[in-house]
Length: 441
Figure 1: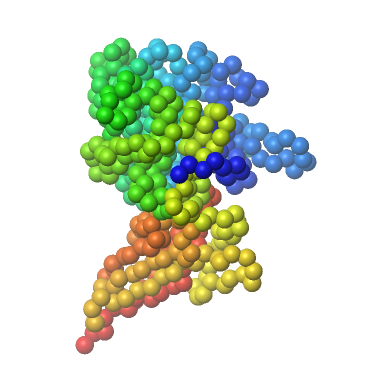
Figure 2: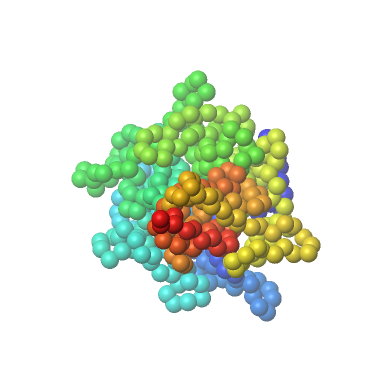
């Protein structure tokens, strides 16, 4: 079901806004921001202590003066805590400036930075950026993209999913699987534009394509002409999210997308260990002139239309994500060992429960259980086990907010569990448990 909403938090159609401490980050082409007309700006905004308009602080500007189209426009905080930015190739037909394959240009790329509003310099380069300290711009995370209008991270797996708008033949979906919890994959990936368009060779490639190789192929593409049989087609892909709202039944775990021209909501199953996407299907829903998807802190999915409405996808039993609950979670801090107190009034405070059971009498192997209570649609969050203050095991909570670990101990081992909540990384902890080795005869 698509339900029209007013006032729910979501990603705006023009730019994704995410909180970073007391700042908001915004990607835009406002000429009042300075620079040449058409330049793309990443700015932060913070409250004005004297009242009035928010204070704008420039983070990054990218020259985009030749053409008005192919701006990209997505901002996402990755599961690693860094800011990812998508930029189009600079516009025009067929990448006439050959930016896609040029790692000395920021256009046609996914960037990865750490913004520092109000400081000089205004951002830094995170460790692990593939071109830092070598040929190519330090800010680049991945390249070879035409117009990555929307990309997202799967909140359960950490996989990055990019929907790249095609030229005149194919629309494509790319994936960068996460190699571990809290780690983003795809560093240095070349997604092929303008040597490739979807799975096919582009008809008018850049000169650099003659020697380029090692492209990361998409996991799915579709044509601009209707192939019939209910298959996907369109002219401008709008990427969405992997559904982690358990109330959406058989959509759970499927990636949602639409197209600005064909306007139908579709879903497919993304691969985790190589291979191609599977099970592409129509969901029987139409949104006129769709421009963006959004995901709130509870994992609920929204669709925005340039006609004005914003819709939320709802299952037979809609998820419970009341505003007071969100407020309570936002103020949760790490709790000391022992029971977590609950306020005398207001919603039930979220708790992280930890238990362990020895698998065999006299044995050294334990089954350790972690549970987030209440769940409130937060399945998929990463949970970590810590030993003497050092993380040593991690996985993602299942759809019921539960996780299981199997541990073997040779000595007395105190453990705690931790999970991060919300956009700003609030962390809560469980009580401490001590696992004892078997007694020696």
